[in-house]
Length: 161
Image (cartoon, rainbow, N blue to C red):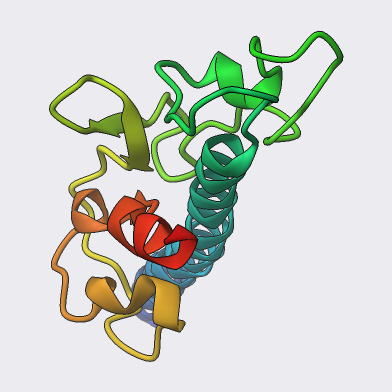
């Protein structure tokens, strides 16, 4: 009878060890999955932010006959330019911030015109360097909200003159 009791104790300890190991493995898998998802969202943030920057540039450079180059006052103007009689799209659709899933924070000039967008996410980015030339200001930034996708108006004016 004593032998059976000892075997039950060993089996119980074996089950407990297996549960602990499974718990640790699940935790590691979960954190790895979270990292993979955040890295994918980070790549999407760079792409979408770049699309907004290009759309603002396109809007600015799309001067109608006799018109003046100007920046948009809202994001809807990038999807359908109200200055044109026809349908002119500078942005295919109004993308959401992929990190938060919400609207972007608008970066505006003193006149209230949109010059760019940025995320509201306080998360720390994985990418710290190795950015393209247009995103070189992102080097060393500690949160996604510091990544501002801004159209360089001064460079565009200099290029035009």
